Amino acid sequence: MSARSKEERRFIIVFLAPAFILFTTFVFLPAMRALLYSFQKWDGLGTPEWVGLANFVRLLRDDNIFLVALGHNLLLFGIAGGLTIALSLFFASLLSQKIRGASLFRIVFFFPNVIAMVAVALLWILLYSTTDFGVINALLGRVESAAVVVGLPLPDLDLPFPFLQSKYLIASIIPMIVWSATGFYMVLFLAGMGGIPKSYYEAARLEGATAWQQFWHITFPLLREILVVAVVFMMISLMKYFDPIWVMENEAPNRESHVLATLLYQKVFTEYDMGYASAVAVLLFLIVLGASAFSFAWSRKERIEY
Image (tube, rainbow, N blue to C red):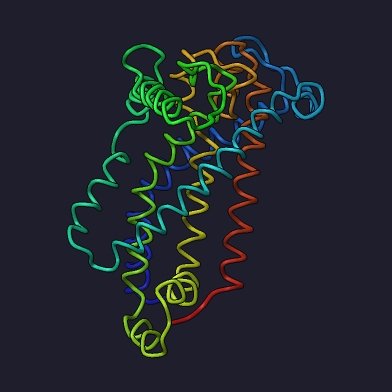
C-alpha cells in the first residue's frame, strides 16, 4: 500500500471515528440492551430475570392491547398518511405550474411543520374545545342552525361534540396530522418535480395530453422513488407518534386511545415493566424495518431512468 493510500485511510478514520463512537455509545449499545431486556422480566431497579420469549407471548397472546395500539397506528398511517400524501401531491402539482404567489403559498403550507408537536396539540385542543373557545363546535352549531332554517337533513349530533374523548381521539387527530404534515411532503414533491425535464411536458402538450394525463403518465411515474421515500418517512413518523396523544389525554391514554409509543412509555414509567416495553420497542423496530425494506426493494424493481 502506497504512502498516499495510508494517509487517505488515516484521514478517513480520523473523521469517521467521532461519529462511530457516538453512534455506538448512544444508539447501538442501548438498542442491544433493549433487545436483551425484551427477554427479561425487570422493573428497572431489581435484578433482571431471564424469561425468554414470555414478554412477546404476553404481548401478542395474553394482552391484546398491543394489537389495539398497533391498529391505531395503522389507522393513522392508512387514513392520515394517505390523505397527507394525496394532498401534498395535489398542491405540489399546482405550485409547480408557476402560479402567482407560489412562494408565499409554499411558506404558508410549510409553516405548521416547524411548530412543535406539543404546541400543535394545544392549538387543536382549543379548536376542539366544548367551551366558547371551540371553533369547530361553534362552526358545527352554525351549520346545524342554517340546515334547520333551510330544511336540510343532518345527522343527529349532540353539540358540542366531545372530540377529545378517548373513543373519538384517534379519529380527531387525523385532521391535525394532515394539517401539520402536508407542507413538508409538498416541498419534498416540489423538489422532485423540479428535476423532471420540461421537454417531456412540452412533447405531451404537442400530442394533445391533458393536465391530468401529463400528471398520471409523466409526473407520477417519475416521482415514484420520492413517493416511496415519502411513504417511509410517513410510516416512521406515525408508527412512533406520541406527543399529541400524550398531551390530549393528560398523560393517561387508555385502551381506546393508545398507540405503540404511548403504550411503551406507560409500561416503562408508570408500570415499570421494562421487559414488556422492550418487547414493544423490538417489534416496532422490526415492523418499520420490514416495511421500509419492502418499499425500497419495490422502488428499485420499478425504477424508471430519465
